[in-house]
Length: 233
Image (cartoon, rainbow, N blue to C red; front, side, top):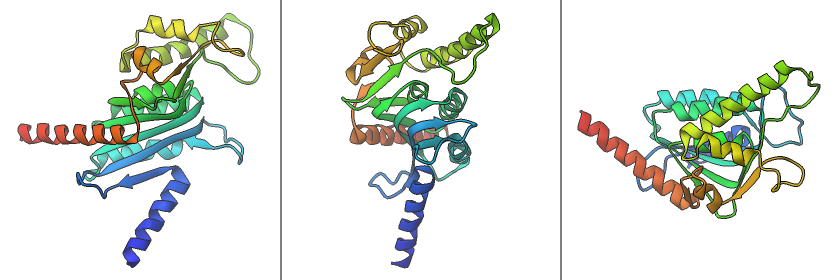
């Protein structure tokens, strides 16, 4: 009983500190690591205490540990983010994309801006019917020097995002840029908002579904991965 209480306390602390949790008590006997990307993706600047954030310095080391772990079989990523720091978001997306273990993402609420690369970085992706994705050009806060080099720098950042998204899902770079530069959909910004099935239709997300579909798909992928390893042995 004490061991069970201690485990529950450890789980609660893990959720409270980093929004991460190991799911190891299921009928499939698979060890699944749960990662959440919520609020704003925090970069090198620390955001205010009242803001919900995802800290990349929490997620990156844990993803490295997951890759090196013999116990963890797969990763489920729950996403409800307004976007945030481009460099931090791309770092998380690249780490997820480079994992050798099966990964599934589920967009809940929204996966806006830099949340789009994170959502498509996994092996398979889901979005709930009411989930949204906002696609818009790169923006920068603070003072911007109005010279050609600044705009070239913006373009290079945007090309990195566009190239990553197009290489990890079914949308082309040309279509992604069209959605990004749409001028009639958002009242205060340039870009597009896609809801549920729209994301699947555009080829960004694989399937509309919820937690049961996402969890079922991940277990299926883990079992196929195990069978493949057994065949190689």
